[in-house]
Length: 199
Image 1 (cartoon, helix red, strand yellow):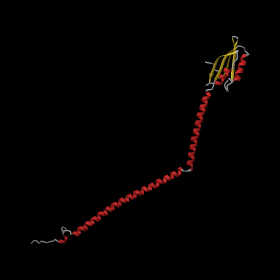
Image 2 (cartoon, one colour; image 1 turned 180 degrees about the horizontal axis):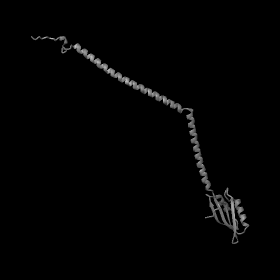
Image 3 (cartoon, helix red, strand yellow; image 1 turned 90 degrees about the horizontal axis):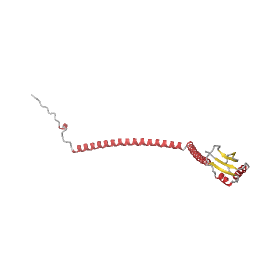
């Protein structure tokens, strides 16, 4: 004959209804657990933010120290002396450039010798037995040259002497006189500067 054993125990029935206070307790525990989890997450984020801030402050301190070191090097006497040497070199270069420009200007003016005074001296000098047939002037070479004729041999030295007394000539240039007879007259050439023939 078959036997039936009843193993049911009401206190072991998990399907029984949970009392109200139990559900409240479970809700409170669940809320506490959720709050604790949120707190842990926030604490982790705060720790990461703190570490990031610490690293940024450390990097800032290093950068500030490097800048201070560079500023110290920049303010060093050697740097100041180097700057003064550079400024002095630039000033000397500017002075040399100005001197070069002045020299170029003076050389250019020297190549353009004024012929005003010699020509005025020529205009003021007159001798009735001497006449001028050609005048050659070149302020760039410079060249000053007279070609003429004299009626008598004695008139030419007197005329040349009068020219010299009037200031005819070029500074730094020695005069040269060439003369020969031509049909009873004295043909002459009185020259300062280049001995090239007139073109």
